[in-house]
Length: 102
Image (cartoon, rainbow, N blue to C red; front, side, top):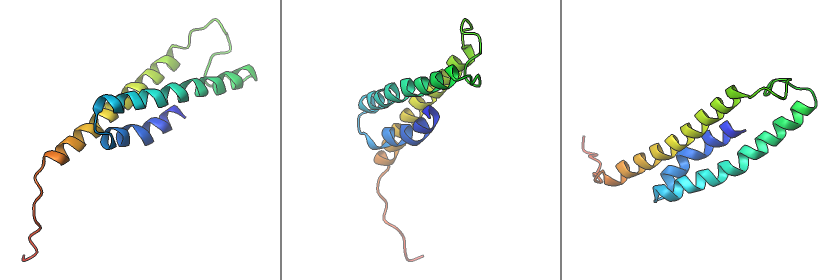
């Protein structure tokens, strides 16, 4: 769920929002809603016996889960920056008339 939201939202936010800081804050705000919701859903599944996200032993620290989510979060921030960079480059490029003659 977090990956889907990151892929669908991060680049368009960076591209559409004029201020990079506002785009970052908007991405962080959306992520701060989606990430706990995802954790709650995974915890519900874990208590029902599913061990695909978390180990069966509750004392085990899920380092792999932390690492994957940190990479997804960093990639989202990178996509916001990339979207803003693409927007800045497109705005800085002078408009050229199309040569229809040939």
